[in-house]
Length: 296
Image (tube, rainbow, N blue to C red; front, side, top):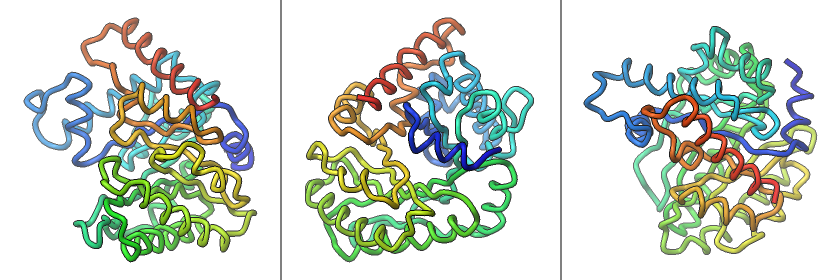
């Protein structure tokens, strides 16, 4: 795989990044929204088999094309599985021209100082090496901010940027994701503190080894313009964060230069009970609407 070609695709391509990295506690919810109740499976193995079937159906669909989908974020277990008989990351790039990313965080710690830091990531060096060997381009790592606590926000950013340096050293591009809870009472104040902290740390990242940012859609339209324009930022992508697809698309379209990286909003309306034609049409409608919002 050509890393330079993939980087150019993310930097200048038209489209969005599909987040197909539901894991752990988010998987039962994703399956339920897809029409599969918890009573339909027993244990984690069956659960992950079912969610992999869902992901395979998505990436195999004619609607899931590299013309509109620039990249896809995979769950670690997906890295060891196949899509249509081919290594998952290889299938994405070689068959779909979709740049593969890998979620590397292991979930969140309990809330402290208004934030949830990432849990430790044992075996990180081995995971990054394995991802690189399988053709993964970048990683994604998520923290959550729930209150405007400067010490908590600084702790999130320090942890995120420390991990980003390890990812960069492994030859991969990190997606730094300090998610802001859309229900936070002081969401706009959090965004001001967060942007200031991001800019301070980004100034220490060489433009030759850029990072990506995955952020909650801002309260004030265009608030991330400085981040979009920063020479050390390859791309700013937005999470849907609990907004409906319609609402997330509307907000996204008002923030030029920011593209989608939706998970639940992407799969909204998809069902295991749909025929292939119905499923493909529902996914087509979803992808087209997110694409249009991303290029607006």
